[in-house]
Length: 355
Image (cartoon, rainbow, N blue to C red; front, side, top):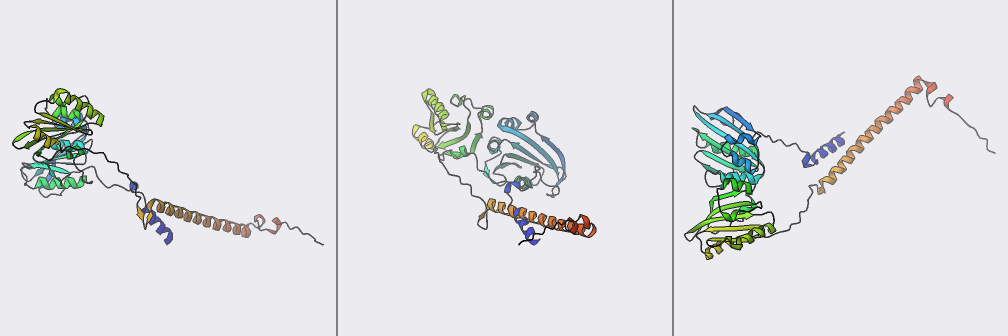
């Protein structure tokens, strides 16, 4: 019995990770009585249809980057204060980061809370995974929004994500990080950038990051466009060099990325900025390293344990069946001797005389 129990426990310990139960709730709001300043919920609403976003601040942007769900709760604080918590679930982490850069309340800082956050005037906003959170306090303690934000961030969980890869290609020389704006798609850029620049018009889809640059008293805007393929980027870049990038507008292509710099820069300064734009392809062999227990791959050990477990069950069933059959024959011999296979009347004896 102890051996079977040991096999069963080992089987549970080596079960695939996909079969584990994920104890994570979809309700990321603070728990009741978690904060002593918060008294009660005065408003609780949720949306899963983008049609209702028109009455929400930033709702049009949510829809354009990829809206999935919206939830909001307002809590009463003290005698007359309140704190509002809004959680928006978007298409992916790029969409959440885009909303953070476009609806910022201050400079973007690395989390926690979240992967990155901004804060100003009793309000904190952060992106974490594919969720964007906005927390606003009114008549509440100054540190309460930050504490609530950390609570919500911990409930969302998951590993911390880096900004979209396009942002990492922004040149360092003269970079003003506080002005960064990131758009995950052409639709979002055309609807919310307010840009009328002819050089940014193209039929191809793209993601774009923009920021202000200042070098030696000269300033301007760098637009970094990432296209689906290098061929599409080259087609766009060829159109620019065909006559649309004269004067104070400069461009550089690196793989599927095209950088367009506009401002009061002279060619030498523009070259210093654009020379930082680089792109290289890399190939990495991804080897699936199986989980091991006692030096044995978990998959093999699981198969062996399952086999032993079912063999033990089969042996047990065989023993029980054998005992039952023997008991049945004993019962026949004692109570129904004529029908017993061991009855003399049912036994035939053949004698052979050998000479």
